[in-house]
Image 1 (cartoon, helix red, strand yellow):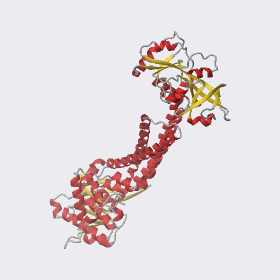
Image 2 (cartoon, chains in turn purple, blue):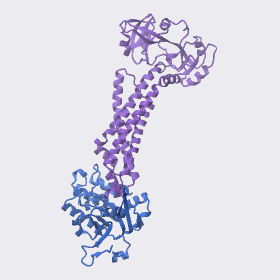
Image 3 (tube, rainbow over the protein chains, first blue to last red):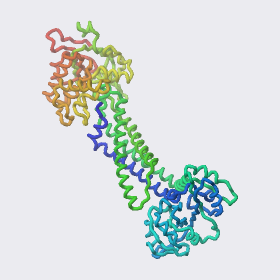
Image 4 (cartoon, chains in turn yellow, purple):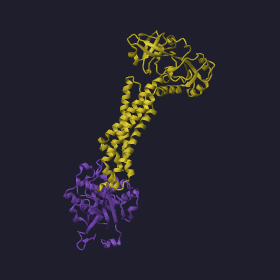
Length: 376
Length: 250
């Protein structure tokens, strides 16, 4: 079989280049947008995904990690009584006002009070062991490398949170937060920094199970007991989802993503289809000759669709390579970018869908390939 | 039937048109292009239709080859009533039985001469080897064996038209239609093209119908039909020694 579509694409690549670029840039925009959104909004669930807890216990109706309320400290012993639970530890969230040594004004910080012991669950995946150990010192805090300028501080220096003095004992990475700055400290330090007298217990309790696969069942089992005041439970996976969803949809960011995806699709499809139509028009006499010789319109349409497919595939390849480079660059600059398999698949589907729609539009141009018009 | 020959009386004609009429509308203006034309063509002959431009010869070619429908009358090609075939069936008929050569060569810029010829064969259900064998043979027949790896941009006008002829010929069609095949070529190349077409009619028994206003072609045709205003004015056999000139009363 003579590969008409591919040979034409290679021989007349200049003609198809705008379509490939349009597809490529549409794919790249989409890819980076999704990666950024996932990266930025994924950081809202960092507290969950960066920790090794299987179950979270917090105030009922909590919409994101940052909007928790205190629960009764006695819930801890109740949770520990469940045979499936291996370890429970409190997690204290304090909204703080940071005053650094440099002239930065007040900075809104999210203080995370965690268990600094070596087998602590909170931030076990995000915080190196040596830094965690250093948090055991009174008033010690760890901050992310990317926020040092913002906080106007460097390692070893002191600052105040809510009027209490703290000292920066370590600098970590991958602890960026959305809408504020994460500050990690021990549970004791966090209690001192919390100046709200109404806050008696921890904001959350996090638990590790002997069998993480049981998370949903155990979470359901621990729920509904009101003897210790209001609280509820989530599996870590569910709570992360709730948290990200809150930021994506309740803040309107998700609608923005979908809107931009629509625009990208539309612009990409217009440019790509116009290029493909021009390519069909450029060969319309040859197509008409093939039809005169009896090659069916269906076979000619297949040629156009195949060209659209290759344009999509090549554009995607370019977008993938460039996207990879840009994402590595972003990572090196501490810009949060995350690409998951479903997100990558969504990108591929969008780009190939764009190419397919353009190919279908270009197929209409084949109507002009009427062999009778060659006899004039 | 005034043009019937002895051969045609024994065998059914390859192409038969009876009382065909065709008109085009442009705005309110109705132009009668063909007006009750009757014609029959025999296999193994090169028939030339000549006449001034606008006389309806290209329309006649389009109708006889199944590219256009008639307003009235009937066309029978190789025993099939073309008027009764739908679009799909017409495509199939053309695929199996007809070849075309156009004034513009209409070759794909990206394909080599060999691929241009092979491409339509791929759609005929031939095996890969058979398609290649036929493509090779046809290109040899038009004298392009040594040029078949070249793309159109590397070929001369005459060579391009020979590729186009090979593309039609490789299908081994019973009917071969050519529309002004020499008008874009110089004398020598035009001569070569008409020789090839003539040879195809002789050696393959193909019915070759050629439309041209090129007077150089007349001497090479087995039969010359002169057209004007949608009707055939004369029907001659220039090469035949005697009694072949025959005027059709209109």
